[in-house]
Length: 302
Image 1: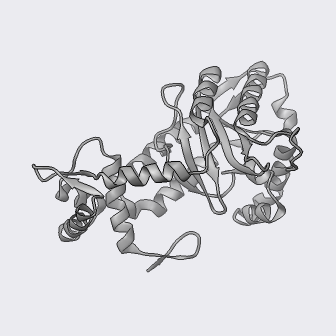
Image 2: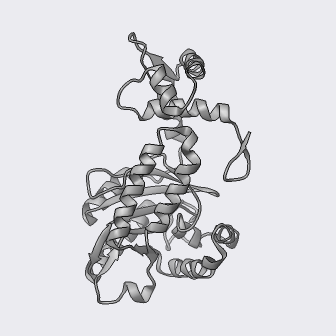
Image 3: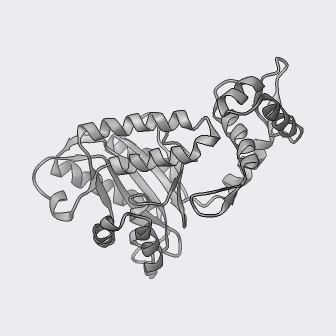
């Protein structure tokens, strides 16, 4: 048994089964048992035994040429998950419209106690770094989930801050106060950092084909977060000069007014005027309000 980042025990045999299912679900074409074994670093006998069991339960299908694909049982499972999954009404349409208005990629994440999971990502407008896709899970470590944490209770905030280096905690605590006051967060990064984000994204996409690389994948994603730049203070954000903007985010609430999701846009631009920055904030905030069942007029407190 091994230890996960959350401290609870994990099961390597289970990881191997999950790795095969995830690999087949991600591929554009069928794969042989040998291909699967080599990609995941498994012995061919182990891969073959797992595939046989998965096939018996409908989780994979074997074609006449002995190649494998994801099986029909995944369809029923996906439908049940989709029906019961926590997501704001009209999420996909709102995200696509937001991306079209701001001219860059948009995404939505579910923020849980120890992780952030991407549940929607737009494509075709602007640039989305490789590896950022629906289902991507990141440890809830700064700056991930900052806008939701900022509006959560003090226990959640203390846990989030405790997971960071001691030298960063004071600055991050001040950042949470600022986000709670303004309702959004914006990060800046220079051209070199934006290039690094893209390169790291491609590394993550490559690592995603091997379940055993999950710890390394999480480390690379943490580097992406750190490379995403510095959180702008209110004064700097409202200055007249052009500023680089990598990402922006705002929290989305449930019907009871609890912040559960984070909506993000990624301009990934090295020079953005004050007027453009204001427009980004207006569009991001408007979409967050539209996605929230909660509003200041409903009588719910944060």
